Image (cartoon, rainbow, N blue to C red):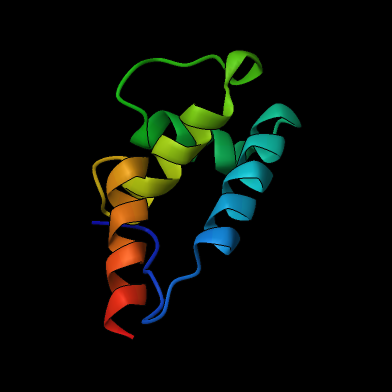
Length: 82
C-alpha cells in the first residue's frame, strides 16, 4: 500500500523538488527516509551512493507508481484533464 497519495491536481515541479529534498535527506542520514529507500527501492542501495534517479524511483513507488516516468505521465494526464 502506498505511503503517499497524489493530490487531485499534482504538480510536476513540486514532485521534482520533493525528489531533490528526498535525496538530500538520504545523504544527511534521515533514518525514516533511509528506511523508505530500503523499502521501496528494488535493489540494495547505499545511502551515500544514492542518486537523484534513486530518489525519484523511491518517491514514485511510495505513491504506488512503478517508475518516475509513469509518475510524470500520470501528472501530465491529470494536467490534461484539468
